[in-house]
Image 1 (spheres, helix red, strand yellow):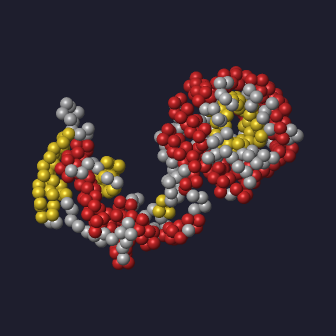
Image 2 (cartoon, rainbow, N blue to C red):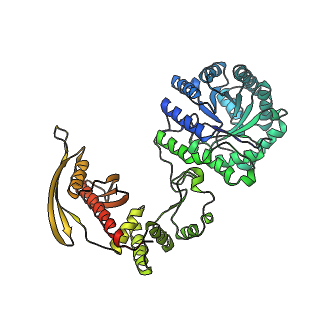
Image 3 (tube, one colour):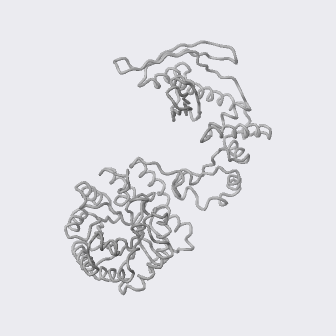
Length: 517
């Protein structure tokens, strides 16, 4: 039995059937190239008979990639198979993938055919496909709910007819890991010509067991796994490519099997999919979710600081991520906050650390996520406090739909402690009222930072709700976060931008005076 597992990616076919995951031709080709870079063995490019658009997309992918097999899905009908072959015939490595249901419920209610008729159809479809293409895969739809003896007969017939791969799908996610593994073992032992084909599995996630079922099948002898990036697909989705691959990689001693996937391309590939379909990766998604390598618990952070193996069974770098995220929040311990401050260049004594620690805990009760800039701002405010340099005195903002572009006029006090050192006035035009406002403030202060983030949140409901604006800016390698709250969102925006500039100024001044490591 081969110790090589073939990875069959169906993101572009089954994955695209997930609500909201539709892709256009150019996007499909772009993702197919990324899958080729990832190192999958087979890309199921689509269902050419479904529509002209699907046909053109499969054809474009077949012509675009060279180092991976391209499969076209077809029903067990001559016209479907002909259409599929027409779409992939220009591929460097084409595959026809045809399927037919084998469970009693599907044969009786969907196909309205007997077992004998299904056997004839399956054999005829594979023979026709094999006459066009040397690489043919047959799928027994709803195999996990099929009669095992009949399923074994189907497998024997299609292999004899020319199928090089036989796929055993858990189409509705019904199987349990132990029984699915037993089914694969039974087929490999019972089907007389099983050694002439690769046995594959395609598992759905209706009960959350798609990856577990796939792994059980691999242990039993399956040597192809059909998966999707992020597990997208019909209903609850498919087996997740990144989860299955990293399970094999992390527990190699159990499975003793390798695949050609480049694990450092897993995160970039999932990010590419997320960007294309416009759906964010879920925070708690294994391997690639934002929280997959994030630690907030004080106990966990302490363990991670002593040895990352205490709470991470794989490195973030191994899947293409930049590193562990030590999240500072209400569950963080003093060790984590001290390590964060040390990383940022601050060496505080125990009393100063206790002051900052208490301030972080207080802020964490009000704020969902605490950034490094928040922690640094607390250090500057609580330990090395100085007065603000800039203070908003008055402002007017104009916006409309007519010919006059949006513009803002500001009066800003330049402070020296509590004394007003100078009053500055300025006006500026912008693409919108916020842009005009920020340009005006930047011109007055002489600081023109890059705006990394602008976020508005309502504190209460109703049209008179107060709004909180958060801005994140960067200037000459230094980052700062500012906030402003007001019932007028434009005033809140100005307050937030000025707050961020004041914090930036404090950082520059205090960095020269604060003890650093």
